[in-house]
Length: 224
Length: 252
Image (tube, rainbow over all chains, first blue to last red; front, side):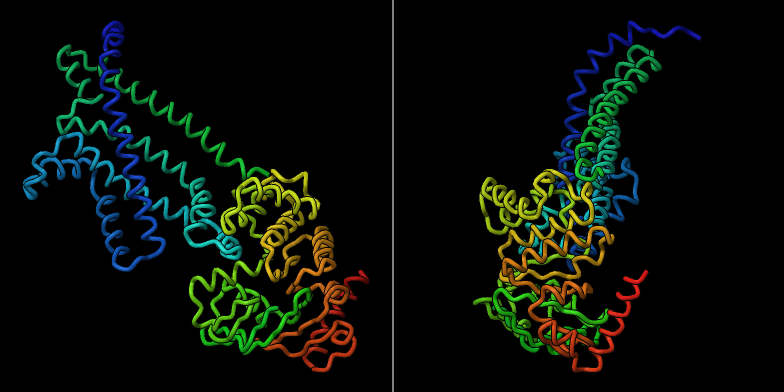
């Protein structure tokens, strides 16, 4: 039993801070792209667009049914062997790609459920005053679905931030990769990994705080 | 002026509307009565294509369509020329009372927001809910919600307002204020087609009462005649049941 080396941990903070932007960038990019893709997939599922619906089901089934780590290895190490133009793919791009596809599969289902969950009478009321399908989606259905979907989508975002640490396995030096290198140099594994754990924890708590504020605002219309 | 000719609607082979002919003059107040499941609501919902009719012709002002050939543009136009008041109010849950009334003006009629909100405030005054402008539906009573529902229909300045059992979901204590607002509209000669079980309202306010059964119009006429001297045995039978029911309610 030894005492924790707090000075080492404090010294690690500015080093890790330099890699924080990359972690956040990958998560933000992944989340933005996954949201767009998930909305598209959800609309296909809601409208049951022939052909595309079946393809979407297969997509969702595969990306929910296999581990993210397997998917990342598949994109980074596997695909370039099949598709020559992908040999240039770097670890960051492969990570963003993997996070996007993986999480969009989950998010599509929660967005679809939220849209379907909006009461039919809301659609009828919008139609009755002469709105087009696009207008009623934009003005009535999606705003109400958003309120339902936000808590789950935020949970996926939190999950995604933590999942960026897998980029380290593709040779990307982000928060986790940097910690690993530092730990390997100092042999202070506990100090290094507890520090990076706290990093993730703080980020997630900040997000959770933001989520609570957002939900309060979205629920404003529903307080009795 | 609204004209319906030979309107047919089937659900799974059953004709819920079996050839409806109906003409509504501007400023006329028509009340439709009849047993449950006889197609009263379906008639209203076919007039604005919430249900797609299977046959018939529909004329609303200068819009005349064969319902089987109605294009998307025709359907939108028919909806813009009719306004609908729902049994369950169906207010936009994510919008305030003011926004509910202004929404159609902004999105459908493309009015600037300020102008639409000014009009919505006028309407809120007419429905007696000026102080609830910024309240969301969830915080309003059933009666208040339905008055906003009627306000939303008023804003559309439609040729006719279709009322689909507007008081049926209300607790008894809220029925009166909604009926009072409808009477007020009737006095202003707003064209109205009302499906209701409120026989008192039909008797006092309607220019014409229509009795429907089995997807057809069985009998129609001014309320004094239809209630006082019904010709068809089915009408007599129905009226005896509902009026006896109301008397027994009054007695308790």
